[in-house]
Length: 327
Image 1 (cartoon, rainbow, N blue to C red):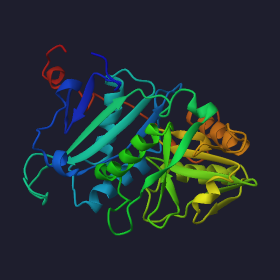
Image 2 (cartoon, rainbow, N blue to C red; image 1 turned 90 degrees about the vertical axis):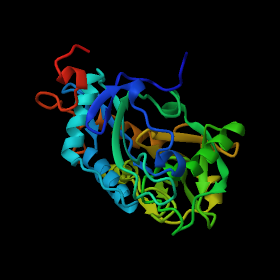
Image 3 (spheres, rainbow, N blue to C red; image 1 turned 120 degrees about the vertical axis):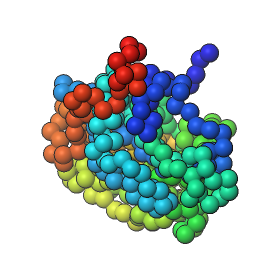
Image 4 (cartoon, one colour; image 1 turned 180 degrees about the horizontal axis):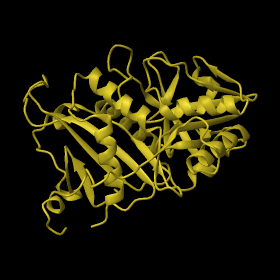
């Protein structure tokens, strides 16, 4: 049976490497009923030195901080998880990898109070191309403003990359698709531009890069932070400030950014063409520099890349292999 998910062979499951099909949870796990999980999305790009992580320490710091916000403590250190991830990439034979570490509450508590449920950590890796389609990076996507708002401050902690937060994004994404768009643009509870269904957003007007001021309505993106640094490198002025909805329709360029989305132009909003209806010049400069850095074609002056080097002896090995049984 075909699947939309790019299945790989092995998953790291709280210290053991298991076949993909066996990386399962009990149906009564707390995460299934109450959304008690936090996760990260990390990319490793192919290079002459093997796969190279993009900003791995920053992602793992955010994972640990997200877990802390939800009072979840896990036993593994960042170095141990890095070794496990590097081994897992090699074990699955990947050059380019999308990496999904997830921290969740398993079987234990029956009610909302999660403390009786054990905290577990899983890591999956797979090959994932352009998140919004193979032509999206070049031609852009059509977006629509969602009827659903992002949560208000002091409701859901949007600083945490928590699984439950993405229920809101799911509604936006499905609504966007029903209206013929590839992606949604979310507004904050006060009606200001916030983000996409699962990525940050930038606008360009008269050569200046605009992005919403960091508030409690969206995740503080690592790719977003990278773009701010690249804009400075390229001499592109940046303004971080509240953005009213109507500013979308008069922008010269708009793009989404995120680990999965990378830098994806928006060619229209609510069926209104943005600029020339294609990737604009400022977006193109940022996209080209970003992709050149992660591919190793341009110097990594910010120290964002680090090698996904398998550990000596292999920390992440299938249990059967460690026991001397062929797998």
